[in-house]
Image (cartoon, rainbow, N blue to C red; front, side):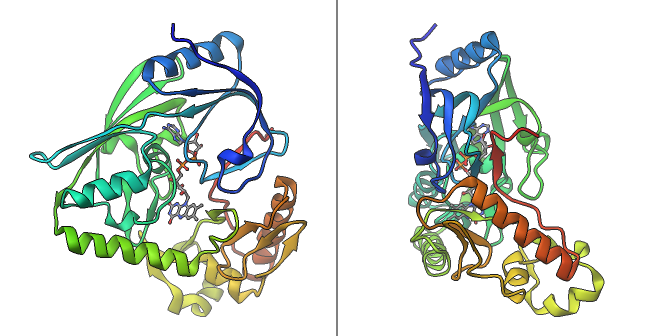
Length: 314
Ligand SMILES: Cc1cc2nc3c(=O)[nH]c(=O)nc-3n(C[C@H](O)[C@H](O)[C@H](O)COP(=O)(O)OP(=O)(O)OC[C@H]3O[C@@H](n4cnc5c(N)ncnc54)[C@H](O)[C@@H]3O)c2cc1C
């Protein structure tokens, strides 16, 4: 057994990009699979609910926090096999690290992710995507541990990737590392593409305030009520399939700037909610409900929250 340090009542908001939410009842950081196995065993012995936190860029944590064990993953090494054009990385490597490493090696496949916050494991968990790319396009194999400590290896097909979805959202497992298949590319061109995305994000996203990225998923064209499709026809984009951007729907309803307490629907990007400082998750959820209700009443569209909700009793 490794010497895990378990802390009590650890504030989680500093570990998230939204800077919202309450504490973890129990908390530890793990930097090896042995420590992860010990943490899983401890949670099981004590009947503690278990939650794995990575980059914290896709989380809405309850103001009451999480009444269980939160494990902060620190599995952050990576390795490139240039002859096979593969990159194998620990789940906690930041996307920035692996995007930069692959480009530096002249390997294409991750340049779409320039500026994508969060970890490699978090990206696989939610099949993160943007600018026409998704992590699923490069995944060769994913290794995980079940909450009972069993090791599993899945190929791409067995990961059941979908729109912001993978099998890992539906099974009690922790991704420990994964291998990507990349292609030969031109280092200068790849760097330029990634930097263009970083610049585009900086100019369009309200990065001056804590936020969680897109608050709602985009709307599949086939889910749009037909009587409103014409209004949004010019905004349809193919990313990763034909969608109406939710930002456009909310902007058309002129809801930007709507505020509850210290959380506000951004004036800069209408699918971002920002924490103006001292906001609460309760205020955030009130604002989310207001937006959902108004968009439903106006267009009959059911908006779906994109980030993961943590610590709520359903
Ligand atoms: C400014 C901004 C812009 C963004 N833009 C985009 C975008 O363009 N496209 C996009 O898809 N997302 C975007 N996001 C959301 C976010 O960056 C991604 O969802 C990211 O992949 C989350 O990774 P994370 O490490 O931060 O995960 P966390 O937020 O820590 O966790 C998210 C979920 O993943 C689970 N998880 C994390 N790691 C593991 C693991 N190793 N094993 C099992 N479960 C795990 C957690 O338990 C949790 O349920 C954006 C966020 C921000 C703040």
